[in-house]
Amino acid sequence: MTHLDDETIYALAVAGATHSDAEREVHLRTCDSCRARWEGAVALRRAVGVAPRTVDPPGNLWPSIRQSIEARRPMPAAHRRGWGLAAAILIATAAALVVVPRGGRAPDVRAIPMPALPAVRAVTDSAAAADDARVERELLSELELRRGELRPETAARVQDNLRTIDAAIADVRTEVARDPDNPALRQMLVEAYAHKTDLVALLANAA
Amino acid sequence: VPPIAETSAPGDAALVRRVQGGDLDAFEPLYDRYGGRAYALCLRLTGDATQAAELVQDVFVRVWEKIGSFRGDSAFSSWFHRLTVNVVLQALRSGRRRDARVVVGDIESDPVGALASRPPTMTDVRLDLEAALARLPEGPRVVFVLHEIEGYSHDEIAAMTGRAAGTVRSQLWKARQLLMTEMSR
Image (cartoon, each protein chain N blue to C red):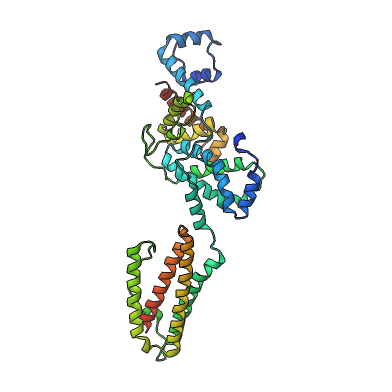
């Protein structure tokens, strides 16, 4: 008898018996090659039959799942307010500078040179935070030097807006302190700082 | 979709309703209930323990995003199972699969390690199957797991994977032949 094909061998393994066909049974007893494949098929069927439906993941994946979901969730209104306020102030102040510069003619805001700002980084990186703080101090000093070149009402408005942005940043920092593992809050803080730096840079150059 | 008796425990409906309402705390019990099921499926379909763990996270994030569309027409377990398969197949199609394959004894990527706590009389058989599955080419492995372990029909697999039914059948036979050889050693 020629060798049994794999389909026949597998079917015999599924059926669970070989004695239904005497000729095949004899062949399986005498042919090592077919016998080995039949045993492999039986072992495969047995392994599939006892394969567990559940396998414990390596460690608890829930914390990272929760973190991913929270990062995607819409921010609560109270959290959004500070960031939105800072952004609105930036836009409004930039517009005011364009509209009411000292000396009358409105400059082309696209022509205002912007200093190289540090890339947005995680505020938990102390070296990066220190670098950002240094840049901000330098810009504020520059702004102070040129304050006299701004119209008084514009200078007052700038000072008022910077205080509001600082208050918004303080609010976000408080939230971060309460929930330090929340990536959305950390990102919000980074962006709030970036907005402040952008605003100061814009004012310094416009002045 | 094959019935999954052990994952149809009472309480799913109430948890799902809370999650649909945005209650993230109610989602954790669903993870506890279905995380192991998702991991087993991801592990066998990918053959990669690290990728499987990543995909389980993707699955639950996707469930969170999509659970609003679950209307309760079928059991949550069935909906979850199908979504898990879709996430894995999509990941495989998008080429996220790593080259690293599972090797028994590799502590860093050991899909069978998690099975070690199972009854010892069957552990060897399970280890052989998991390791053999991991060594299969992707196409035959996916078809074999979906058909032989998960109980999907040829046509269902063809629809899910976008392959012709004839291709599914040939890949299933390819997998069986390779696994028969592996298991006979």
